[in-house]
Image (cartoon, helix red, strand yellow):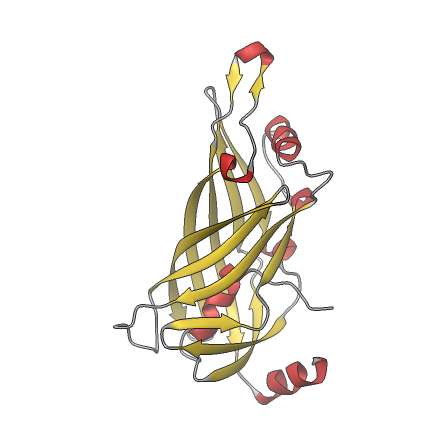
Length: 211
């Protein structure tokens, strides 16, 4: 079965490494995180997943480039909604109910491609755009997400944020307590990742043996 991996990690593959085709090992550091932020008319809430829950072991990936677009051999992430935590248990419970987590236990993120500025130095891209499909409650919507990154040796830090409407997925913002609490239709997906990237013969052999 093909392993699933987050598109926000895969962006790091090309920075300082990508040629016509490249095979690398990606290891996500535990200090990484992804959050979903929302608001009501009374308060804000944050749902969090740390790096260990997003990816608990290194992965091997092959990347190819066509002009200024990068395509990856593994481009699908299943985010387990049960792995979110929050300081506001009620907000977490209501959000999981809103996105129908019992029937759809994961949020799916599929990377279409990564688009890099043509004028940038290929040794380091500081800003890129990721074209992704996000599926929530069985409904898919396409987004372009701007991502910034910094490379230090074998480590790459990535950061990005995207504001989306839950109405894009056929969901209606709930009204609680007879209209006293109204949830905003807007949520933001915020992430900060640190990855260790290794390019070596062992990675290429490992990928070949799994095909």
